[in-house]
Amino acid sequence: MIGQGSIVRAENLRKIYRRGAEDVVAVDNVSFEVAPGEFLAIVGPSGAGKSTLLQLIGVMDNPTSGKMSIAGSEVSGLSDAARTRLRRETIGFVFQHFGLLPTLTVAENIGLPLLLSRERSRDRVEFLLERVGLAHRRNHRPAELSGGEMQRVAIARALVNQPRFLLADEPTGNLDSVNSAAILRLFQELRQDGLTIIAVTHNEEFARSADRRLTLRDGKVVS
Amino acid sequence: MRTWLTIILANLFRQRLRNLVTAFGVAIAIGMSFSILSFQKGYENGVRAELDRLGAHLLVVPKGCPYDAASIALHGASWPCYLKSVYLETVRKTPFVACAAPVLMTALYEEKSGEQQVYCGVEKNILQLRRGWRIDGVFPEGTGELLVGSELAKSNGWRLGQKVALPGLKNETGRISGILHPTQGADDFFIYVPIRDAQRYFRHPGELTHILVQLTDPERVKNVVEELRGCDAGLEMTIVPLSHLFQTIQHLIENTRLLLSCVALAALLTAACGVSNTILMAVSERTREIGVLRALGASPDAIFGLIWAETTVLCLVGGLSGLILALGSASLVETWLRQQLPYAPPERLIAPDVVTLLSCLGVCLLLATFAALIPAWRASRLSPAEAIREGAYTA
Ligand SMILES: Nc1ncnc2c1ncn2[C@@H]1O[C@H](COP(=O)(O)OP(=O)(O)OP(=O)(O)O)[C@@H](O)[C@H]1O
Ligand SMILES: [Mg+2]
Image 1 (tube, each protein chain N blue to C red):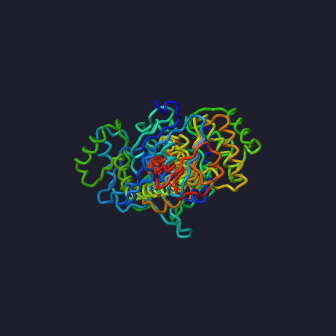
Image 2 (image 1 turned 135 degrees about the vertical axis):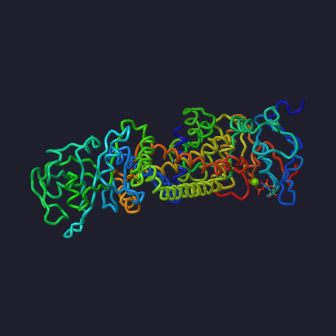
Image 3 (image 1 turned 180 degrees about the vertical axis):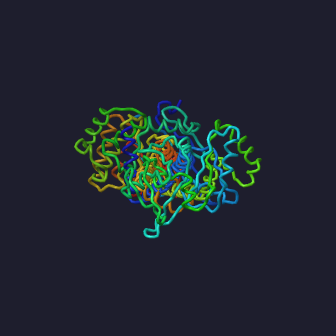
């Protein structure tokens, strides 16, 4: 059967937002698959529905219709609690705005998903601090870091629960070209280690380095 | 656990001034409730203690006196009307009466100082009622002998055996035969004299102001009251059971208490609204952050708990400050209350205790939970999609 081994499989996904009397079709009949270890870039003009699609893949929102399966199991019918667990255990999130908690240190931010799953693993946090090259910053607060450093903390946090795939929404959108290049390098290294990555991006270099790109326009896949 | 605590406390520190102002509102409300509860307890205990010191089950006062004449007997003042001594015999003969002590009480003003001096003419049987009395010297039985209260003796520098001019009475002197040990009551300022002397000094021969009655069995109050009201002399006397008097005095301040309780309740509700509003604001400011937490796998319950905990810490900080404030200002409030009340026992009016303290902390927790309900519910309903919603792209 097709897609038996895929990590993410979307079939005729639709998302319609109701805005007053008018309906906005943000994602229109989108189908695709992502194989294990693949690096997929989602591109398209502003308002094409990229973020909306990412919300659906990340089990943060329900599609209006269509099917989504993650690691072979259907997610559309899942309860809120099951979806929360799925996000916590199988998906790593990276945001354009980094999404760090300003009141926590770098190490505490990285350990946050462990806290949410009531796990305790200092070693894992230490390993990731080294991995993203921020061991010397472990006790700093986000406000004391550069944008590139903050995004590296966010990536370390996304990896702490050993997710099946990484989901990123414009991870270099708030960074200058030097920092963008560094983050892209980090993504490529992770990809080499066998991690599956799905990233929305406006960055052409970033999109070029992906294995495959999915182009959206007006909610539809155009290529 | 430590990280959660860090998150909660650090979140409260993010809007220090706003949270401080909100906590101050809680402090006022909780401090006020604590003061009011302490007052109600202190007042009740004070009145009870004062009645206990009287040592009587019944008070017999002249008919036609104002009903609160009874409270005059407690504090000492001049009486507007008198009882005939002969009724004393009637009272004594009534079944279940163990002891009937006659009193002739008068307050005189000293022209020089303008101070009031209360005199009580009594018989020796008053000692049966005042079991707590300790006397240096002897109880006055001979003509011209005096028993004086400890405070009075102290302020005048009076000694045992000394011959003194009677305050407020021209050309009268007496010899101090006894000094009363401190009682913490009004007795500390009184002069006790044999009743015949008092009748002569104040020109009320054969008359009394009231009779203190002790029963053989306090359960028989009803029988004795009925018996006394039914007899011939009953037309001239008002019989006041002291348990009644207790209620009457409580009624006197009922309005004050009700008003204070309403004010406290309003303050608590206002504080709760303030807290709710502050936390709602914090939730709306942190919409995306909460979305991120949800995206990372925090359950709605965890978010609810987080906001609830923040609210509770805020309220507890306010509540504890309020309690410290209330304890610190107790004597000030006490002074003010004494000026407002129609009747106040000499005991401390504001009597804080551990139970009241804990109840107020309980109220504080309740207030926090109540105030947290809407913001915490709202926060827990936020979608994880908030983490990557449009229009929020500033780090
Ligand atoms: N919560 C929402 N309610 C209503 N309409 C929405 C909502 N979120 C997105 N939309 C609309 O859906 C469409 C797709 O939005 P989306 O954010 O997915 O685009 P995007 O491709 O991520 O754009 P950008 O590149 O600017 O981030 C847009 O027309 C947007 O206005
Ligand atoms: Mg977007």
